[in-house]
Image (cartoon, rainbow, N blue to C red; front, side, top):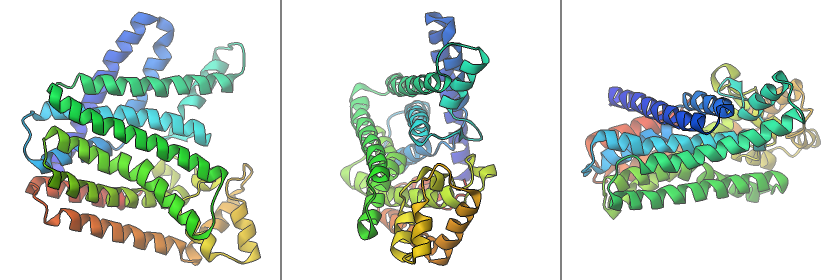
Length: 357
């Protein structure tokens, strides 16, 4: 199964590259000034782990009753990568992130372009406006890629419902994430809010809905859809919890983000919510208040890392991850899935929740 998933990832790489190259040619026919936009879309499309298309593919494989050939499935699920481009470009604007995947974020890239060409006006404003439009363009192209995949009208209609629901949920989760940073809860309410965001912004978007899309292509029955959704929600939450840990402790060389980036951005994750319950000393409370400060110092980041570990918050999140992964595996153990599909799902779940970047 390892080889097969590796091949799927390579096929998704090719599908995304080909589609974006075609889109770039269309942009060039509109105006040569759009060349930087096309180049950035193609460059951004070359990054990423392709986790969403691979989960969707495994959902299709696990259902085992597809009338479509694999090439059609690959083209359809690759559209998820264009949604991901849109989400990441917009997310970097919201978080005011300077980098993504080891290179400048899109709004920083276009601000630099403005400066290099000595254009009029504010470079940062130009960069932000350009990135918003590029993110919107990627979302438009995601629709086009799905429509051009070659699915039958009935299958496309089923898939489109799951596709639209996924986008609705991730946008809802994104807003709730922004809201949580503006109006943070405390204690148990903070943890529940963080987990609600994790379910919408990560679990549904990253795993559950892609599985639903793959199963819809395969015309799966309700029992298979139910098992895959249960699996997907638990793996997705575990994926986000792992991301919460990496956002604080991840190595910039592997994550492509600055050290302690989530602390600097003030993200109210489950990890931080648990720490808020456990760290009650005045000195700890003062340190927690510094989360999200624009001038958060490297020594404060290191102190926060130390206290998050010492208070047991990291260990508690690790336990939550283990529990979610175990429940997810149980959800597909007795379901009527193909052996290859089940093996692929297990492999992806373990890789997504034990990753280092």
